[in-house]
Image (cartoon, rainbow over all chains, first blue to last red):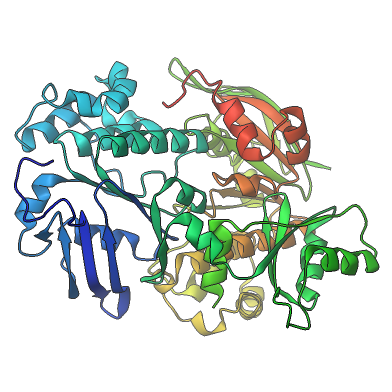
Length: 318
Length: 245
């Protein structure tokens, strides 16, 4: 796939990370991170700000040295072979880092030139994305809106035909419509065989990845497909909808068998004991009955499947 | 009682109309969600309401004061926090509270008394002497919100207060918003999380500088035959002439 000959076979993971740790002074930014990413996968690193996502991406993109552990990208070691890795990866940092005073086209040309290629030679790779901002190619990059900046940054990360892409929070601060468009672009890039490692604080983007790692406080909580993570929730989840939701939230938290209760958009999600040998085990029916006895009417109470956000909250509650 | 009243408010930058003739009002104690795509004009509108930017035309009254001619009085009556800037990272927790309380004219004795109460309420007693930069983001945002309403403003403006915050803390943050609203503080909030739009009493959605929809989340879902606010938002934002800009 790349012009170089990495020391790997088709079965070699695109990325392999073993026991990577990194501290800044007393702060442990990453703790014993181990995972592989297969060729052509979209792998999501999902967690809030400060969880360690950017530190991990900088280490994998050879911009930061780990304190311990090893990692390879396309078979190359991130410490010893950093020069080789830099030629085959595309990296889009979390903070917009293009040249604000150069035009859209000048930015793309600089990146092409730095990697010994031209816009024309690899235009087919960026066409889908770049054509959307090409009408504004004479505009200064600093004057672009959030969604457009991300499209330009992605074009610049792609113009040298990388085999693996590191995208650090490409959708942060972007509205829901632009977010959706960006993910459509990533699916397209995947279909061209590019491996994509992407981080995001938005839990709802998990389902768009082939596999995900949930990260909090520098550690991976779980690595799996979104489906398997949802299946391993292991508790009952009940959705409750009604009037006076603020009051209802407090009441729900007082009911025996309720492990936690949080607002989720227009309903509350109740995590409940559901094993039959538990005395205070709750189902939608028994919970509805309990609330009815307390005088609640017009309630919609039902058992639901958890989403990734429910799983993340359950995993971090431990 | 209306605490925000806006009539035909417009802001042009050269030939570009950022805010295009918007009119709406917000009731006391209401949680008002101010939504829109990137570049729809939210920040410009919010800056005018905070008395930081002079409108090209139209009128706005915030907390009883004219935003154009009484902007200093507006500023003294409101609180503000954003995702990007909230607290001074190199100051300690209590120093930040003291600084903001001082700026807004809270008597020093009262500040001292209420600082410990506030920290106890947040469960931050042990962090009183910590530098803000050493706190996790979620804690910082919770503290910033408390600081922004420390002087009991009529209205608090929150610009994407929960961006990047973990899911549990994000919800705790909204429970703080509810409490503030119960105390009678009006909350004017922007967010990119569409589940948070559901927590507002009413939401407006801006498209290309105009307010294209304004109602309670449930009424908007009904109006657009949508299952979620996310769908309502996407439906409206796709109409934008500047789509993707």
